[in-house]
Image 1 (cartoon, rainbow over the protein chains, first blue to last red):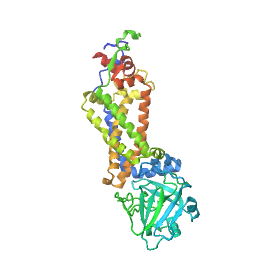
Image 2 (image 1 turned 90 degrees about the vertical axis):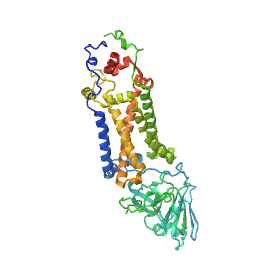
Image 3 (image 1 turned 90 degrees about the horizontal axis):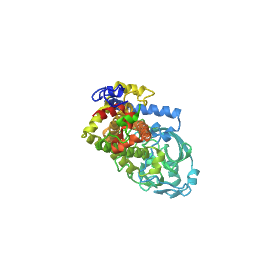
Image 4 (image 1 turned 180 degrees about the vertical axis):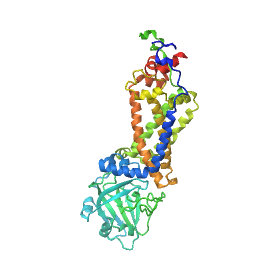
Length: 248
Length: 210
C-alpha cells in the first residue's frame, strides 16, 4: 500500500466527506429532544405504569433505583443523624399532665398500630403501599395526658434543624403514626430511625424524621419547610398547588 | 506489503488531530460530566446519599455544574477546527451505515474518515443529552414555574436518561482505555501515522495528501 492518490486502495479513491452525507448527528439530537419532550408530557402516567410494573416483577428494585418506585432520601443537614436505639428517648412535654421520656421498649409497650399506605413527596414522587407500624400519636397524647384545650403540636428532630407542626385535630386522626417500623423492619437511619412521624394524609415533609421531641402547645409554629414557603396544612392533593391523588 | 516503504508509517510521523481548543473542550466537558454523575449518584442512590451526606451542598454543585456545561461548548464554536470536526461528526456516509452493521468493522475493509460511525453517534448522543438534561433540569430547578405533571414528567426523563448517559460514558471510557494512542491524540493533539492508517485510513490519507 502506498499513500499516492492513484493507489488502488479504497482509502485514497474517495474524496473528503466534508459537507457530504446525511446529517445523522443532527437528526439524533433532534430526535432526542423530541423523545425528551414526549417523555416530559407523558412522564407522569409513564412513571406510574413503570413503577407498578417494576414493583410487581422486581420487588425491591426501588430501594436501589428510586425511579423504579423507591424513596429518595433527603436530609436538611450536613449528614444523616445516627442514634443508638438503646440510648433513644422520645420526649413528650408542653401542656401535658405527665412529661414522658419514652425508650424504645416504652414505645413498644404502648398499643401498636399498623397501616399500609402510600408516601407522597411534595416534589412529586410517590411510594405505593408502604407497610408502617408504631403507635398512633393519639395514643401517646393520651398516655401523656395532653391538655384538651391545647390546639397544636410541635415536633423536633434530633438532626438539630428540622421541626414540624400539626394542629391538635390533625394529631388525633387514626392515620397519624409515631412510626417505628417500615416494611416490617425497624426504621433505618436514612428513613429517620429509630422513630419518625408518618402523617399519612399529608405530604412527606410533615412526616418528620429522627423524631426526638413532641411539645403540646397553644399555637401552630411553622416547621422547617413551612417557613420556607410550603403549606402548613399539607393535605396530599389539596395543598402546595398540587393535584396528586389523596392518600386514604 | 512492506510497511517500511510507507513514509507515513514511520512511528515518528505525527499527524495533527485535535487543536488545543478542542482538547480543552473535551477535558472541561469530561470533568463537568464526571462531577454531574458523581453528585447525581450522591443525590439519587440512597446508600451513597447516606455515605456522602451534605445534601444541600451536593445539590448546589450538581445544579451549578449542569448550568455551566453548555458554556464551553458554545465558546468552542469560535474555533474553526471544532466547527469543522462538528460537521464531520454530523455527516453520515453510506460507509458509516455499513461500518455500524459490519462484524469486521475494525478490519479496515470499510473506509473510515476522521471519525468512525460510533464516534459520530456518541458525539450526537452527548449533545442530545446535554440539551435534554439542561431542559428537564431547568424544569426541576425552577419547579414553581411549571405544573405538577410537567415537573413529574421532567423528573421522569431526567432520571431514566441519567442511566443511559452512565452506560454510554462508561462505554466511552472503556473504548479509550483500550486504545492508548487515541488517548495520546486527545492529550497531545497528535497521533502516530501508523495509528491513523489503521483506525482512520481515509483521514490519514487526506492528511498525507495535504
